Image (cartoon, rainbow, N blue to C red; front, side, top):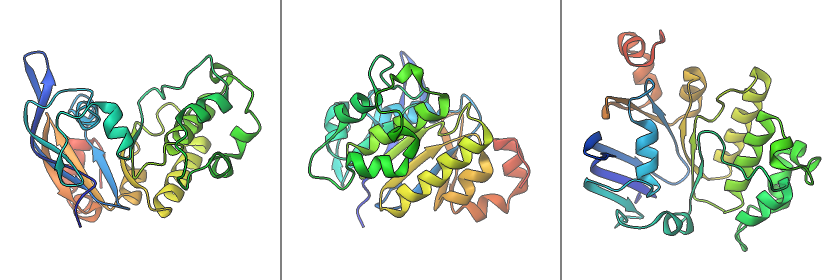
Length: 234
């Protein structure tokens, strides 16, 4: 099966500095990839490069097997790649309804009604502005807005950062429902146990290079690697 999104020999960075080195990653339809690593190891840089927000220095980014390295972000979005950025990125001055409807793409399976069935709390706050929502509600809105684009791949950067434990559990439950609906997911989060329980495969970055790519069980079996690169014991 041709991956939805793939990189081969990818290098990228900022200014004259390279952050990513020889990144090989492939995300296929319906699977969940956990992108892991300590702070500052290149996870957000990789996401920005996949989205077209940073240029490729070496290697290629492929969409459905075709070279998309030079495609602008809006073309990647139209091809079915959606993102929930770190910090959520909702429009604070717009209502929940307006945030959702500005992202809507007609003809897909993710309608406003379906998104609101995932997040009943949003249905109660449709007229509220984004800056009047709690942090958890803002994250729900960010995920809902991304789903309104009817993506094939959803990229979440720090999926539950700063949220209360009960809200984190709710977000993880929702991500599972999105996965079960057939959407591929690339997820970054500091809750290692949650990522490992959700992911089909995990990729661990250290100083911009991949040091592990494979099944979660393989990573969990290497307690020394878990402690060294993720700061937790298996």
